[in-house]
Image (tube, rainbow, N blue to C red; front, side, top):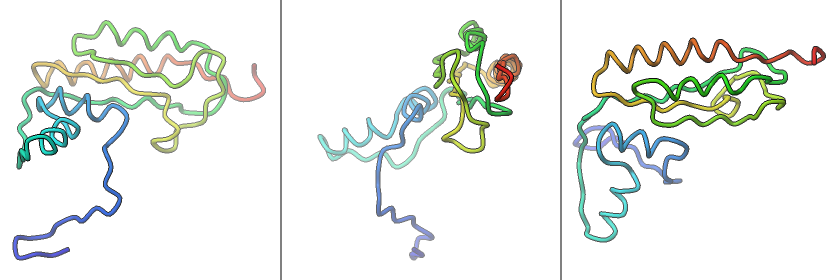
Length: 142
């Protein structure tokens, strides 16, 4: 809707962002949608903006093809990264996984947060190198 103060989004199906978004927001800003909603409900508090206090990134993991994943444990190497916060993999070894085409067909995600952007960028690159080691045998080869 266009208002005198500029465009405004009117959300008719308002809901909390799911997955790792709340954790990422807390790391990046020290606050999140849930915390703000609770403060508003309990104290009528309203915080109009936010400030990035720590570089944070969610790296979504992709499957280049569909098939059977046989070495999900290689993703555990992400736990050793300086900026590592959390790893979520949707599939254990032996699982049939779809080719990643959208948010619903990802293998999972790695949450990274660091005191500086350089570390975050280096660790993101390293996650992509780790991701490339995931073996997904095409259907019919297992």
